[in-house]
Length: 442
Image (cartoon, rainbow, N blue to C red; front, side, top):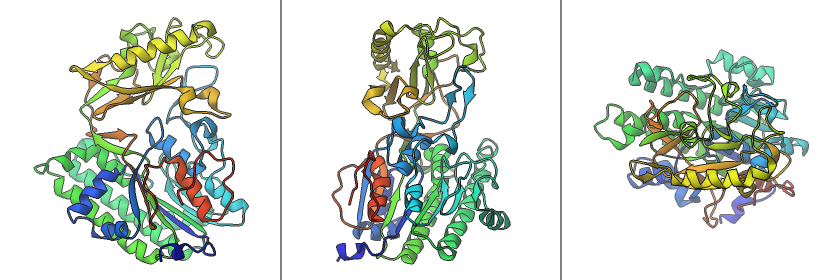
């Protein structure tokens, strides 16, 4: 019966992204009866945990999803990079993506797509269909393609993102903003699903991620003022999932996924402070504003969240590490990072050399090492901190494991990787996936 639902003649796929939603949380809410619609979907399909990208940030994970290739090919390693030939900040956007997206491939084969709120797609690029960019989007007009989509979104009061600054003033006001933004998001999703012709429909809900970052403590503490709000948010989400899936119907492949998992934050750990303490990094002034203030004697530095770069000669204007010393410095960095402890607890669960993670035409831009934390430790690349650890306003942080994957068919649940999902979508559209890094899950 299930296999008959996926007749290749259909050649349509619907994807709902749930930014930052851990699979374990969904299973908990199913077990507690909080999400009955999702429980029904689980009974008639496969819900399993998935592995996200390294590093476990939205820009890298969603870019991996939308291309079906690793960061060594698509070129997005994080939200911040350094400018070529100097040390000033650069914020990669959609124009810096080096690989074709799955909707580019679909469009080249005559298929149309509607893409709503997918992170790291700003500014919007032309496609066979419609696209409204997700986080980080600065201007609705530049985030919309074609112009008629902008006219609709502007007219209905669409929100690009939650206003996170409200969290510092009032959590109640922040909660209201989450719901208002979500309502506008869902209104746009329903409208474009009903009004447009499409073969591939992708919509992402990012309010989940904002909720988790600022109010994860509310989930864990029944006495928290926003605990009921957190649960009611998921009741509302479950109602939408149920109504949306009834609209999609069982004959169309329906996928849900998240870009990483989530956990509570015990401590933020500032890796550039650690590198300074170990003698790898120094600055020319007490309060550096960027890596332009880095001393030329520095041998390594960190970019968010845990990307370590060796300060190489012939790569950076003031690089100090010679090729002959590269492996020695890398091995020393790995050993020191793995020794890092806070309150006598190990912080780093693993350190990867770049060739273990990445490969492709963008490999030269890859970090030399990437660290993964144990749950509860939020690694940061800040250069303004003076203490090794701290606690900011966020109560929840990312995990690489425990991301979510769902499909409305029975498949083996063997902890897929997010790179597999885009490839699976192309396979369901009956399109060629040769040359991509992921494998089809169906």
